[in-house]
Amino acid sequence: MKLEIISAGQETATRPTPLVFVHGAWHGAWCWEANFIPFFVRAGFAVQALSLRGHGGSDGRAGLRGHAIADYVADLAGVAGGLRPAPVLIGHSMGGLVVQKYLERATAAAAVLLASVPTNGATATALRVLRRHPVQFAKINLRLSLYPVVETPELAREHLFSPTTPPEIVTAAHARLQDESYRAFLDMMTRLPRPKRVRVPVRVLGAAEDGIFTPDEVQRTAGAYGVTPTIYQGMGHNLMLEAGWERVAGDILAWLDELGV
Image (cartoon, rainbow, N blue to C red; front, top):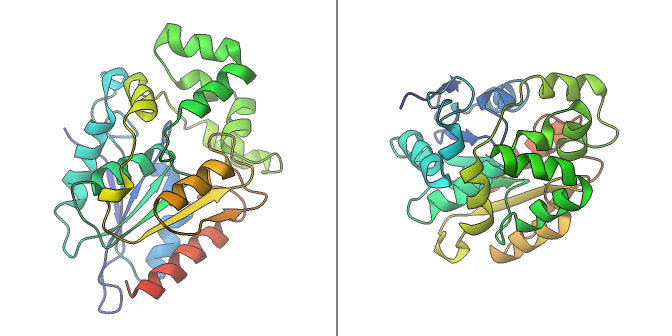
């Protein structure tokens, strides 16, 4: 299956470790292009961002409904597994689950979980959608489609951005959002991460205004990895697109410097 991969930058003697970005539900590699990719290229890294099968410009859109998290892990393995040295993996939301499942059997230089599916899964998120938007929840299950969660700019703001995010940021992102695999949605509730199998340094970041995963869930994920999370005030789920994304990218860069990556 042919995957869309955005590659930028070159490895240097001072930055020999590549970075691989893994997007979340409804997104593609495009979500890293405006901010994170140029930031880390300027910092001297070689960067790759993939669109998982059925997303962005990758093959598999027709069969999107049936793609499993295991399929997405295989996509990541096809990109990260061939890189030397082993890359740093940065996974957002569903992509954070993909990174966690990949690291149960493979290695990396380090991993950043950015507003990730928590270690206890996404069942609580599904229940919150049911309580707040029962009509949308019914659409999800009748259509076997996750798009109803973000099908309007207002819903995209509620779930992916903060109340104060400039409207032009929300509008631009909403125009590029797409459907997500119903099977992956089920996997996010049942195929839970196994942190004890992960043997690489992990950084856990979350957002105070996240409409998908709460700060408490981020805290529990961090606890499962034995680390202290960073929760960004005034920011929503899409930390890489929010106003203030520079703080997030800067913290990741500082952590990589501490690791000597």
